[in-house]
Amino acid sequence: MAAQWSSPIYKLKAKSGKNIIIDVTKSISAGLGPHEVVETDLIHICKYKKVKRILDFGAGVFRHTISLLKHDFEVCAVEFKEAFQTGIGSEKFRQIEDNPYFTSLIWPREFKKDKTEFDLALLSFVLQTIPISKERDEVYTAPH
Image (cartoon, rainbow, N blue to C red):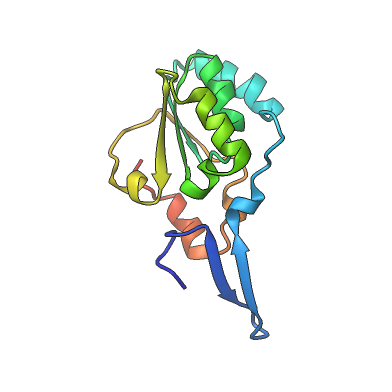
């Protein structure tokens, strides 16, 4: 297997010995808008708590990033570059790349080097797409 989190492609072996290939970018929901909880409760709570900088970890095709930007939060979207290059991902990226409150980091290299601190980290539908338990555990101890 490739170095940890170096690629969205996981080449695993089942207990039966069968080879399994998982592409975590295939879990991205290209046509969905922001989740209702993000649109209502999270934005309200963030404004109340004076949150300014949000890390959208596993941003996919920016379904939550775009909504948060519309509410004037500073948002850093983190994703594998392959997700940013998909048809819908690339289209959405072009829509927001000039927004002064938007930044992005390519996972893993750029993200692991970056030392920016955030007020809130959003991991929507991320943990369940990570097929290796050691990698899921590391999300909880990330330096950001």
